[in-house]
Length: 143
Image 1 (cartoon, rainbow, N blue to C red):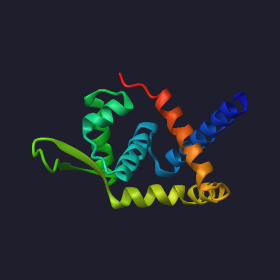
Image 2: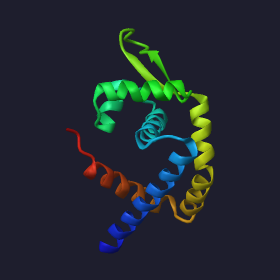
Image 3: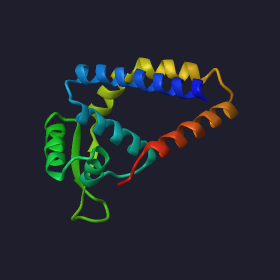
Image 4: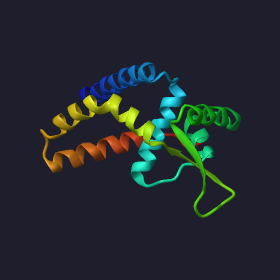
């Protein structure tokens, strides 16, 4: 078990370094990049994201969230739209520019990750996915 948790810490460190490099390349701060990552994940799940969701995810005030979204909108990375079923509410969406830049910077890493995953059977990958999902849930707090 210790060996596995050590490997998880090493993966976390490698991801931190990868994201740090992206921050510099994309000229963004950590909160900006974390917001884009969150939006990409939620988009892949088919989930809409409100400004409140961003604030809760980053654990920042709504005023700070407004400034963050304003900054990302001004740089062309996100846009605000009316919620499709509640015209009073707003949602935050990635732009094509944002997706393109994000995946441009991650492309090589994603290819390398796919190459590693291809070395495992579907059953092994299901076990690994379950383990990582359980770890994620265990360390995610919802206060």
